[in-house]
Length: 134
Image 1: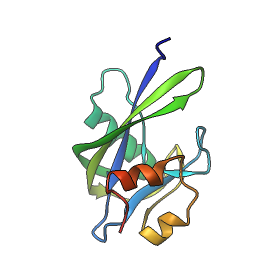
Image 2: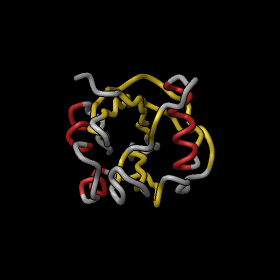
Image 3: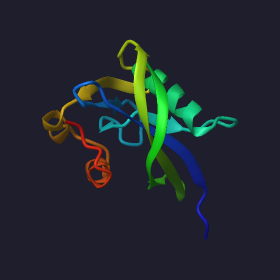
Image 4: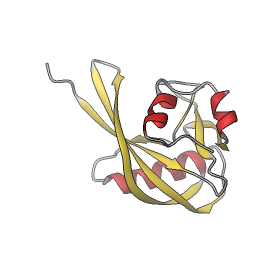
């Protein structure tokens, strides 16, 4: 049986020290865990528009969206499937602060990343993409 696919996007945003922007999720799935800023693509949006909106909503930062880094699939409620496309994004403005879907938002070094409770498979996926911080 074909599962319903839910289009989602995420952002790989680094600062000038190559620390990676993460948000602590305020809601399920993964409440309390740290992950890339991102979320569902809304009707009528293309991926770059959705990435920029989600980063602004969750972190307060304005970004310019770049290349697709990779795509992952994760189980969603009700036998559905999240299809998450992660993009490079460059911070160009705004003030870093946790937004409506996030309890916290910060740039993290490799050491900090390895000591945070991160979303399922985030570390291994970023390692595969050679996209870990620092």
